[in-house]
Amino acid sequence: MTKQARLLVLTQILLLAGAAQIARRFSEPGENLPMTDNSFDNIVSTFTLCSIANVEQALKEVYRVLKPGGGFHFLEYGLSREPKVQVWQNRLTPLQKIIGDGCHFNRNIRQLVETQFQNVELEEFYLENEPKISGYLYKGVGYKAI
Ligand SMILES: C[S@@+](CC[C@H](N)C(=O)[O-])C[C@H]1O[C@@H](n2cnc3c(N)ncnc32)[C@H](O)[C@@H]1O
Image (tube, rainbow, N blue to C red):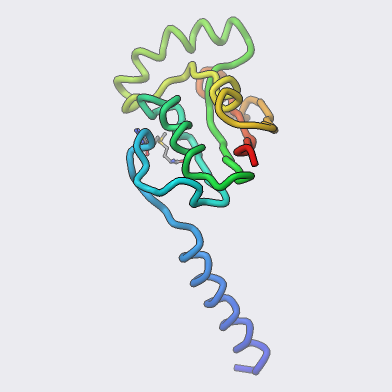
């Protein structure tokens, strides 16, 4: 192995070690996080806000543990803007909650995030090759006030 290759391997190992320390993965109830106030620079959620029973409380908790100026990054599915799709999302959510472990099709993620965070930047779009009922995505970031 050349010196350059050894250096590259070492760099990768160090990067991985650093990432493991920085990104702490946890599986605590979102409504009651055990972390202290103002402890994270950023928090990421993917396809979780649909399932948390008390989602408003969970977002309050995310806000509490974020540092001032910190970002809440999310990719979630939820309520479409199309009234015809909304009708079916509302009809099918009770069934989806049973078969999908508490998952809702009809949560308005924009409203939920904007209620809790500042300067929300958000994209809404349908996922290709996915039924509209379960394929309306919200991707974005909201910040904790400084
Ligand atoms: C659709 S799955 C998404 C899994 C994963 N986040 C992903 O992106 O593939 C919904 C997730 O929400 C989690 N969940 C449900 N209730 C929760 C709660 N009260 N607090 C935290 N997570 C919860 C479930 O454990 C499940 O992993």
